[in-house]
Image 1 (cartoon, rainbow, N blue to C red):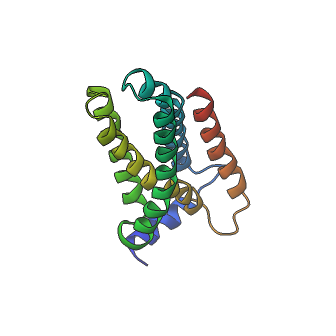
Image 2 (tube, rainbow, N blue to C red; image 1 turned 90 degrees about the vertical axis):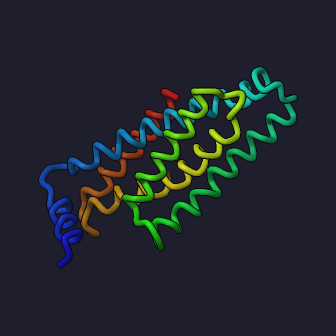
Length: 163
């Protein structure tokens, strides 16, 4: 047994309803969704009123942004499966999202597209892998698994509601 397998077995042998690692994943996902939906709600308005795009162009850009976010989840999942693993993909996805948010905070008019690009790619690496990590906290036939996913998905909904 490798060191990683021993650590995973220890995590999966928790007592109680939820493993303690679930709370980190819960809050990470909750705040990521808060940021995602918060930005999503303001994106078209910002493009029209600050970047001076006409509404048609802003709506097309908004649609392209959302399409790229979901397309990059496929790429992020492939990278996790074949190259980086789930933890590293989640970590680098978070770093890319933070980088994109900082770029947008510093000078959103000048660096809008680079900041948005970092955020899109980061979300693509973050989103598919955090859910997978929740699943790895439980053994295959653990009856508490559904409760863990219910808690995790409530974090998604809370983040979306607040964002």
